[in-house]
Image (cartoon, rainbow, N blue to C red; front, side, top):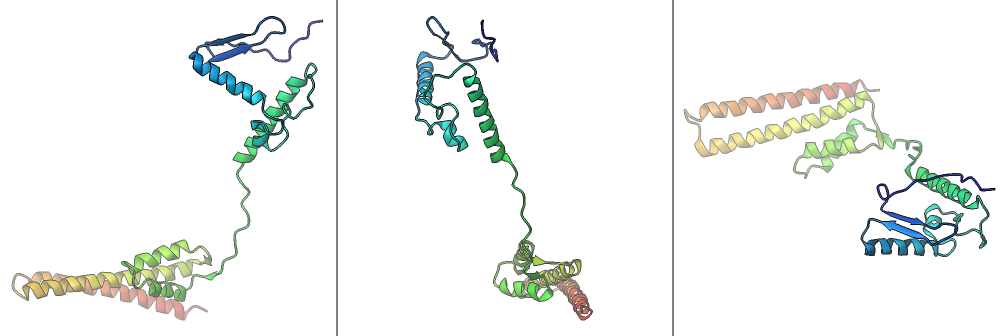
Length: 224
């Protein structure tokens, strides 16, 4: 009785670049639309793969498990063994790919080391005193330090302290420009308006910083 194959595949050079057919009787046939040297190289690679030692083939190294083809006992497979071996091989590859692409389960978040209180922010300002932009460097450090817990009130306190430092930096820049302009041109009819504008801007910025400091001092007085 003729065995009915478990799977049937139709291949042609319209869908494949290289076809190797070995019938049960008669000579084998190789069809290819590749250049002969390329086809010969692919056949050599296939032969090397089939001739690789048991347990050391690419499948075994990839999956970390014995290869159902190369690690099987050296005996002629009975009908159906090859199909089962191929199914096991595909299942092993699927499991390996699933394990490689699976998203790891996140572990518990580490416990905070402390709170982001006002003294911590002021210490960060002192640490960045020599930075090109003290307030900007401190803002960076506060945003990056996720080891400290913070409440909305503590975040607001940090914002007040850093913005006050930034405003004081701006006031110092305006003051420096005011002095440089006055030194260069003196107080004349032409420069008086510009100097008055510099002085007014510096006072506004200084008042803004002072208001932030005052609000923060009141908040700390009411903090238990």
